[in-house]
Image 1 (spheres, rainbow, N blue to C red):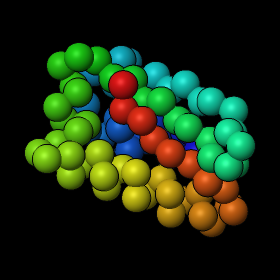
Image 2: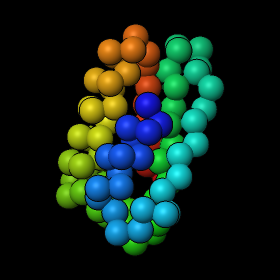
Image 3: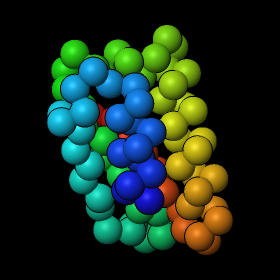
Image 4: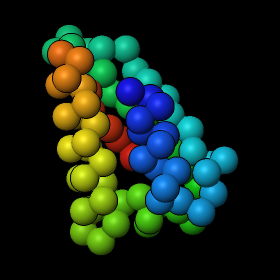
Amino acid sequence: MEELLIAITKGLVDNPEGISIDVDEPNEDGVTVYHLHVAEGDMGRVIGKQGRIAKAIRVVMRAAANRRDAKISVEID
């Protein structure tokens, strides 16, 4: 899952070296939280106008997690 999130994000940013992901342990509901960190200048590219790109990233990641019977959440920090 982490590799998918990196692959999606690399296509959006100017500085792919600035991408990092922190993964939390599943909480009591079984949801694993992925914290996506990008360079300050790339934050707007990842969020998009009115958050459309961020929503699309979350949809793709949830769909991939459903195929593995997992629950995830993506936070963009």
